Length: 178
Image 1 (cartoon, helix red, strand yellow):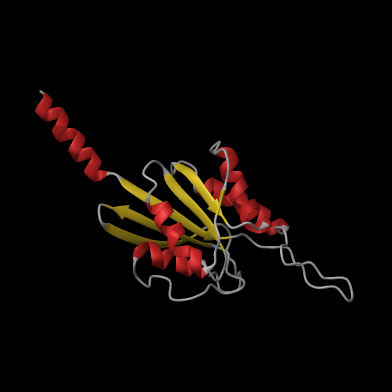
Image 2 (image 1 turned 180 degrees about the vertical axis):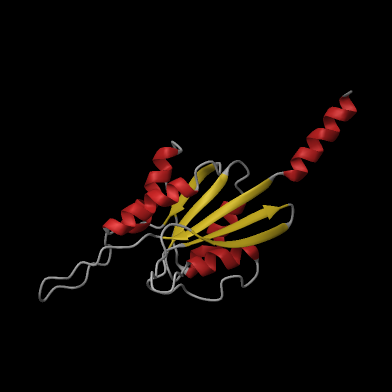
C-alpha cells in the first residue's frame, strides 16, 4: 500500500507545473505638462487602463496566482492591484527593471514553488522578462508604444519552458485588431 502512495505522489509531483504570467502595464494617462514644466514621468492609468486592469483580473481568475511583482510605478502597481485584492495577496513585490538586476529577479521568481506568478512590466522590459525565463528569444524586441493587450504565459513543466502569447481585453489597436 505504501508503494502505491509513494508512486502516486511521484506522479503528481512530476505533473505539476509553474506558470508565469507577464504583461505590460495597462494604458497610462497622458498628462500635458504646464508650460515650462517637464512631462510626468510616473503617470497613473487612464480610464481605459483602469478598465484593462479589471479585465486582467478577470482573465487570470482561477489561475492560482499567489505572487505578484511590479516595478515601482503607479501604472504597473495599479495594473496589478485588482488581482492582488481579488486573490487576497498581502502585497505586490517590487523589482527593478534595470538590466543589472533583471537576472537576480529571474532567479528569484524561478525559485517560487507554490502558486503562479504575475509580473507587470514595461514595453521595453517585457521581452527581457519572457526571454530570460524561457532561455530563448520568444519575444524578439520591445513592445510597440500603443501595445497593451498582450498576455505572455511561460509554463515550466519539469525542465521545459513552454511559451504562449495571448491577447486579453479589447484590442490595443482597434483599426488592425492587434
